[in-house]
Length: 332
Image 1 (tube, rainbow, N blue to C red):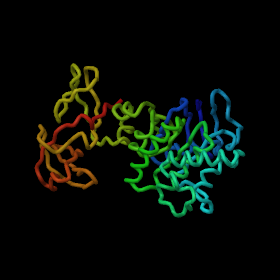
Image 2 (cartoon, rainbow, N blue to C red; image 1 turned 45 degrees about the vertical axis):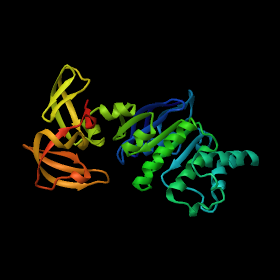
Image 3 (cartoon, helix red, strand yellow; image 1 turned 120 degrees about the vertical axis):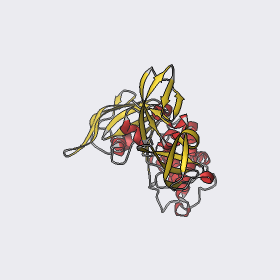
Image 4 (cartoon, one colour; image 1 turned 120 degrees about the horizontal axis):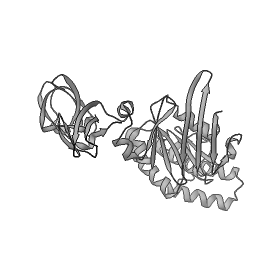
C-alpha cells in the first residue's frame, strides 16, 4: 500500500503540490484527475523520487525518503512512451528484466507473456519505429510491467494519441491493469479516461486534492462548482426538494437528497431537444461526433443542450427541452 502524508513540493516561492494526503491500496487503480498545471504530474514525479518533496511517502509502512528512483520498485510510463528506438520490441520489453539480472529463458517467457497481454503477440522482432503510436504505447506499458513493479505510475499515458485510439486503448489498459492485478496511479486531465481506468478518483486543483471517491460518486456529487465545471457542468440551478423529488424549471427529477433547497449542476446532456415544458430559441449549433451541442436562450438565461445528429435544430429555431437525469449532478 502506498501512503502519502502531508506531501508538499515547492519551486522557489511557488507551491506546486500543497499538503497532499493520499492512499492507494494493493491492487487498486487510482486516477489523479485535474486540469493542466494543477500539480498532478509533479505529485506523481515526487512519488517516483524524481522531485524533492517535504512530507512522507511510504510503502507498506516503510519510509521511501532517501530511496533512489531505481530502488523503489515502481514502474513509470510517460505520455511519449520513451522507448529505445535502436532496440526492437522484445528488447524494449526485456530492458528492466535484463537490468535486474534475469536469465535469458525467464526474460523470453516474460516478454512473450506481456506482448500477449497487451495485444502484440508476434511483434517481438519489429522495430519500434515501425509501430503506430498506440502500438508504441502498448510496448511502453509492457516494458513497465515486465519487472512486476509493486506500483505502476502513468503520467498522461494516452494524451499523445488521437481521440478514437485513446478511447479504445483506455478500455484495453483498464483490462490490462485488472488482469495483472497491478496497483497503479494514473495522472490524467480527461475525466472519461479517469472514470474508465480507475477504481477511485482523486480530483486535484491548485496543488490540493479537493475530492476523492469512486467514479460514480465524483461524477454525480462533485464537491463544489469549480469541480462540477471541470466535470462538464455548465448550468447551475437551485431547486426545492421534497420526498426525493426535485422540482426544477425544466421538470421534476427524482434524486436521493434531503428536503430543502438543492444545488444542481447540469451538463449539456441533462437537457435534450424534444418534447418538454421549457421552450427556447436555438442560438448556436455545434456538431460533435455523435451528437449536436445547442446553446439555447430560455427566458433571461442561456443553457447548453444536446440534440441528435439527424434532428438538430437550426440557429434561430424555436425548440423545446426535456430533462435527462443522467446529466444532472448534485453539487456540494
